[in-house]
Image (cartoon, rainbow, N blue to C red; front, side, top):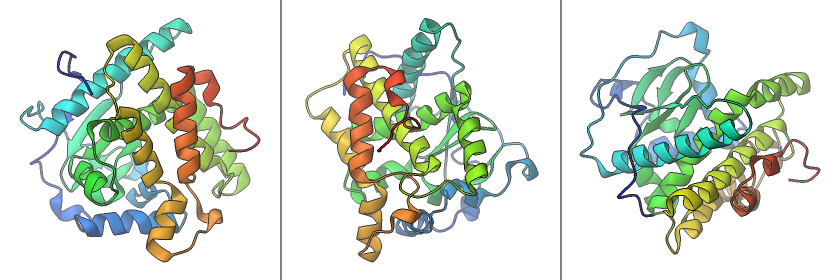
Length: 281
């Protein structure tokens, strides 16, 4: 990715070094195991944080320490999402409100409850923040076998996709649908459709950002697709227990995640990302 000349976002908060390490459910490989177990059980890892309304207000961090290359990359990718979605919202008569990107170590308080590195990156709609322990990028490369700058960018763009869903009311409609369905998980469930739409929105960002900033290089899209493949429900389940249980899917298969990312990247049009209207995912 060509990011050298791009601006960094001002919507970044650095909570590293502010405590919370003792709150995480293990680290390194154990953190990945906890995340995979949650996925296998059909549980959104963010649910492990507990009810948001019972938790204290998120602690404040500090101005980001730009000495970490992954933080610089994240800040620049975040800035491109702000520019892309800002323009798209404006084209449709709206105004985009950027999310805050919060980095931490081990654990941190959020408006959705206790955030832990074991959950992987997540978006909290209650405070409109994306939370990420930068150590996840090492997990992505070494344990998920999805290295590269664009693989990291895909992760960020996917979480910003959830922010777009929140701003546009999609998340609230999906939550209501899941309540009516008594859960909404499984291979064709609302939860999977929500996640696949976020993948598609990540593809929209990729196309639009490249058109605007000419940032993509050879192999970048392949890195993103490899990351999408690596975190498919079927791939994770097959790797951990040797079988696949579609009824417990929360994010979609590897093929579906790649397909919806490619669909968004092919058109650059978020209207093409209506996974809820799709007869087959």
